[in-house]
Image (cartoon, rainbow, N blue to C red; front, side):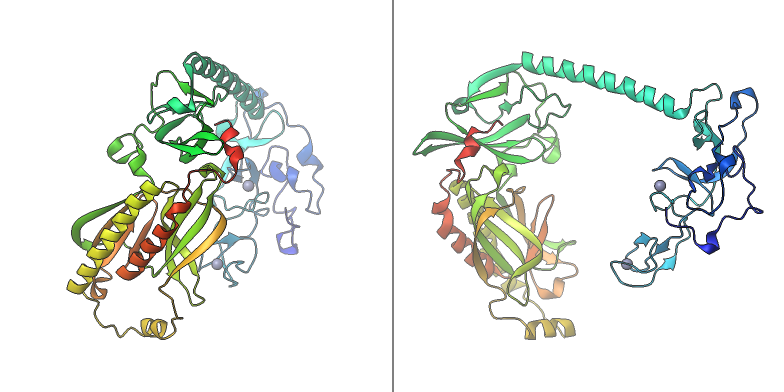
Length: 451
Ligand SMILES: [Zn+2]
Ligand SMILES: [Zn+2]
């Protein structure tokens, strides 16, 4: 709690104290220069008679009552909406307006301005009147008993899940795993066993140390599991419910096509609504996937707005993060088809001349190569192959006079392009690097991991 300022000083005459009266909640006000002995005396046995209630402000998060005088004064930024005890917004550096809502002296968060009825509980704590039980015990004691019961229930349920899982475990080798198999961790008891993963695709790769198996799996996200072909892999003998059940479009199971691909929809959409401002640069990143990608060599295509320094910043869209040359070639082929169709659509729906001043300034100040394709080599590419992209050409309602555009989207990303040549050159550049996709982890220890 912040020190009580002179203007907020406790006023004895205005607020008579009492153990169950209006200022019972003063117990925590050590900072105020008043003596509060009466407030800390044990609560009377309330079960004996009618309960004395009082009004106080209440913080749900802290489960604490406090008086209007103890409330923190809060300020609200008119620009970004930030609420703080500071007079000036940390983000915007502007003075903020006084907030209508009082702040909790413990957590400084805004609370309801309307006081609630509180009562002193059997243990001396102040609780809301609806949480008070005249026959006892105190709310805190009841809460603790309830939690202990819930913990006990959770432990017995976890034990039952573990027993069921072990009874249903089968052990094969990585070489025999096929799409649709569910990999399990027989020691994981959590309800949503984070490691139970459905295999979406399997790729067999020969390495100098022997054959390995690269599995794309899905549990709560995509993960690449790499194992030696003869490694023992625990799997579910029978699957009651697949980890990807209801996760795909139209409530179907997910499959390998849902990730790391591209689908060009040839129909022209004359009424596209929410597309982002067109991106003008693509960076081809050549490196190794992170650990969750099996540390396999990858080629990634990152689309974004190239700024005046020539680098891509702000919001970026991953067109793909490929570790399988066949999968990459199939997606690059779709990008190429889309680029050709975009070029044709731009001829039919060319951009109209604009007299927008900002735009003219932007055009005049572009650095050389602002729309170029660049290549970067990274030790690690910290991104996982995203959901497959849907590609479609059309006109956007707000971008209509700038001609046809290519919309690139999936459940998480939404981008647009207007320059077919940038996309074509990026495809050509990515193809040059496909021979690096050997399927052999750059950190071989991942093949010895547990799943
Ligand atoms: Zn602000
Ligand atoms: Zn609080």
